Image 1 (cartoon, rainbow, N blue to C red):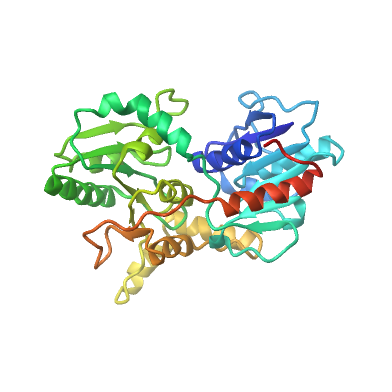
Image 2 (cartoon, rainbow, N blue to C red):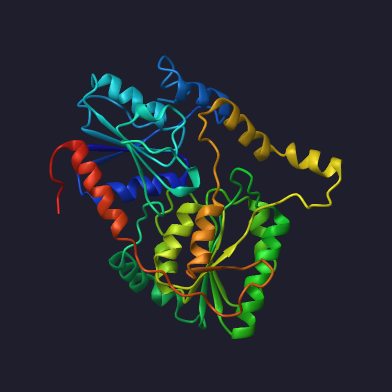
Length: 362
């Protein structure tokens, strides 16, 4: 039996769910809610064996009680101390698999499945794959597309799915950028006589989404994300759209979009400081919340706390699988589609089979 730890981060949750689906094991979802979003206590909890569940709101979280699982799958800094606490309760019997980049020492986990933007050191318990695991399959896209197609029947083609993320690390999705993205996708859809399929996410600020929507004049279907929403057309958008546009800060969204075999455009959220910026402008940039948060992470976390999402973005653009939407020289034609991942899935399956010491369900 496996426990899949779920946090308030949709991207992390989707990677955990994707691995659970790939393994085919009997799995139980365990929702973990923290009382406070403050960063420093979570860093301390991730590094300390005495404070592994500090800050967890047990009244709002799924109970964690025996029988303890054979395997715990986690992602994100908030979930890893909880995973380590579960293993302690099982007297070391539970195996831990962590997705992404752990804050605790790498040896705290039986297996870390990561991607190139974290540049983790080579270790026997570290598996680096090209893109994060995802839940996009041909069967799922076909089923969701068939279920939702009647609702979009009156929208003219070509249809462009626009997937909006939000602030993440040094990436800031401001209302100004929301308006620019809205203008860009609206202009292209208007010139082609097409339409837009739009969804925000848990990280999309309301004012940014409203600034985006204010630019639209073409036929559109808009889905406003809400936690636990039963009728979420995300997979239907991926299945029905002729092309995809996504903000570039979410590696999970980039992975899900890139494996649909649809042309993909990336809207760059990076805010580089201009070469001619004044000292005051550079100081203001360094004092932004997300810039300060990254600096704290680098100060208190392990040496590999650096993150370069540009590695994934460049990998997609250089291979011709994606193109920039808002950079100079952005192509007018669609980029070539990318094939589905299969080799990485097999590497993950083999690694966990070896970890558990038994064959996995077919």
